[in-house]
Length: 260
Image (cartoon, rainbow, N blue to C red; front, side, top):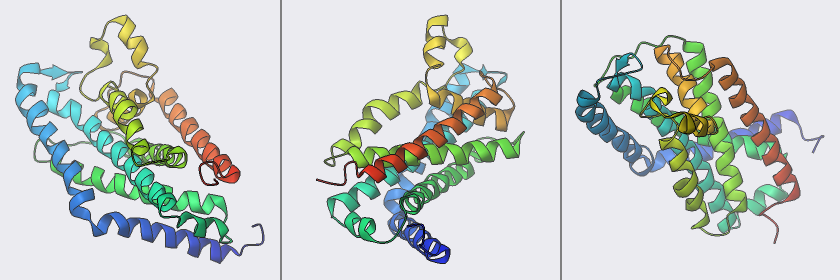
């Protein structure tokens, strides 16, 4: 693989990315619109209706407080689901074997699927951000931090979706993690509340939730408030991305879930 020309690597990477982007953009009514509508309902029900009774949260109106969390929720769910469904479909249809026998390095295959997942997550995140402007005014406090966090988060959950796809043996297996792991972590990750409102025990439990750090760091980038040390939270996010990337490369090298 070391002798594989650089321009050929780029062509292979570009081909995978274009295929992945076309895959979800071709059926945008199924991949982009439904999650945006779901988040829009959160804006109306939680932010607009319930928010009037809740009042302020963390020194901000409740709608303003939950917007960063809802954007992050959209990015997490769609980055993850795009990669896990796409790569498992390749396994199920046996077309992944064509990738494996081609003279393409594993990191190119992985990067192509991950960037495709990030593209969908960020596309839905952008739609949700535009929708939020109908309900509140966004004033980003730290553009560099905000952009870095959302890119890293999309990468982390695209990588996590790739691992799920590797180990999945059926279509049921690709729905177990999102339903029983990812969704509870999101809802307990500070999307709708400040951890300062929780008893000490539950604050400690929240500290074990990686999504809690992602949401709060992203919220700090937009609103300038956070329940965590944003420097440490950002470093944790970077470590997660590096660890998952290395893990995916090792699993691909071993052929985990790909060789019968």
